Length: 308
Ligand SMILES: [Fe+2]
Image 1 (cartoon, protein in one colour):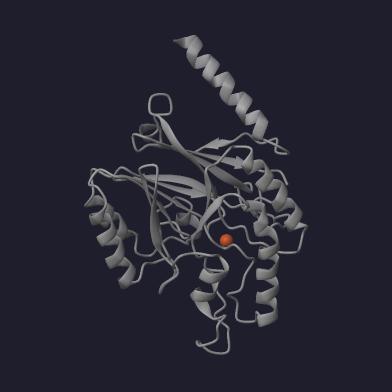
Image 2 (cartoon, rainbow, N blue to C red):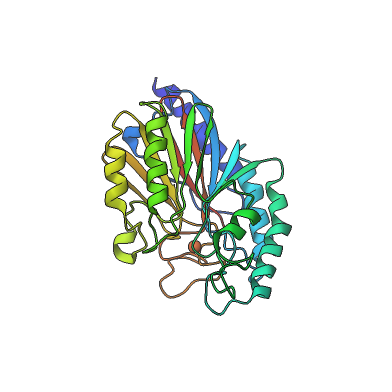
């Protein structure tokens, strides 16, 4: 038995070596132990969660991004989940139409890196151009981002291999919240799917997190959402988010919440006095998560820092 464990460990270390690329940093395992059952349940899906790409033409970000995605692909993922803030920032008041178009053009050039993979995205707070001259402008707000990101809607759901995926739009009043229409939809959605379904919820802002205690940035309606989840005790619910550029895990009422860092770290910059490493945001290195989904409703969420 011990030898089996050791050989699994050796294989794990070997696998890590194959995908670690330029990074000398060890992967960070975030899975809550009680909900991880890697050895006994069958893995049905492997998915990459990349978030806060903040694509920019500064700091050689496009080339560094390409190297990151090449590393991600070595994990043999089934598809990508993109947590939002895909472009650097369109939401500031001084951003011109030309600047917004430049950013989306850059994304169009780079999205080819995901060719051959499905990608499911959610809206980040920096993706929308609110400074458009008026609300009827075709580039104003969410609809334009939905189009550029080829999303089916600002919030939606889909199923894969027996798992239910719910993608939320956190960008509503008092930043990091669900609007009433979306609340009703989410309630109906949770009632519609099987009582004991395995569910992955992706949002941009964390629904619940640890890093939001010192830094802010949580969903402001966490109480409503956690109480809603509590009405579904037989479901196995896991939530993933970005926004913070910080890495943490929270468990509450048997629901796991993974705040999965960011691909861009310190927005592709070198960092500041608070950065614990080059390009880190506070103590979190830039990276991406590989999430394994198991038949029994458990997941394994591993964060791979990248060194690009
Ligand atoms: Fe971000």
